[in-house]
Image (cartoon, rainbow over all chains, first blue to last red; front, top):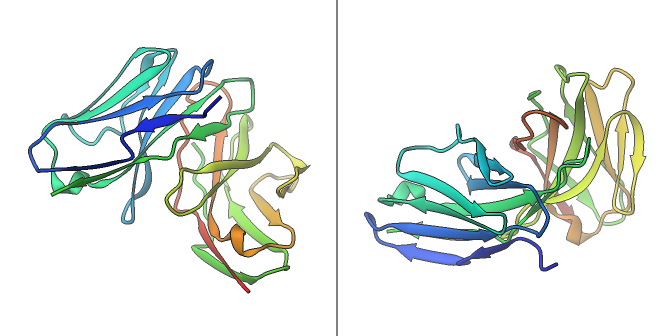
Length: 115
Length: 111
C-alpha cells in the first residue's frame, strides 16, 4: 500500500477563496483523522471519522470548515471562505481499530498558505 | 483523555542513549501509552506502544512503572537522524479513539 495520500502537497490561495484538501486513507482502515499543525498551536485534531461517519468534530474551528467522507477511500476538508489565519499544514491520518492498538498512519500533509 | 507532560526540548550527542519521560498522573485503567516521532515537513510516525512494564522493538524501548503514572521512551545510541519531535499520547483503545497530541519533546542530536 502507498500509505495515506494527500493532495495537493502545497496550496497557495487568496483570502476569501474556497480551498479543498483531499485524502485517500490506507485501504481497509476504518478510522480517518484530520489534523492541523501550526507553530503556535501544535497538532490539533479537527475531526475524525469511523466507517465514513463523523464521530467527533469538536476540533473544527469554525463553520467555515467542513469535512466529508463519501466513501471508505476518500475524504475532503473544505475551507470556505479561507482566511490568512488558516495557513498551516493539514495532515490526514488513518488507522485500523484492533483492540488496544491504535497506530495511526499519517500522510505527508498539505501546506496551505492563504494570502 | 489523560493529560501528558513532557520536557519541551532535549539535547544529546551521537551514540548516546536518550531517555524521554512523560508524566500522565491521571491515566485511566483502560488507557495505553503511545509514542510518535515527527521529522520536519513530515507527518508523525508511530514508534511504540505499551500498557505496563517494558516494551521493546527495533527502534526503541518503553518503560512503564507499576503505577503507570509516567513512562520513559528510551532511544539507544542515537544518531543525527533521530533529531525530531517526540510525542507521548495516552488514551483508551475503545470508545473515543481520537489521537490528541501534546506539545512534544524536541530532541536535537549533535555530532
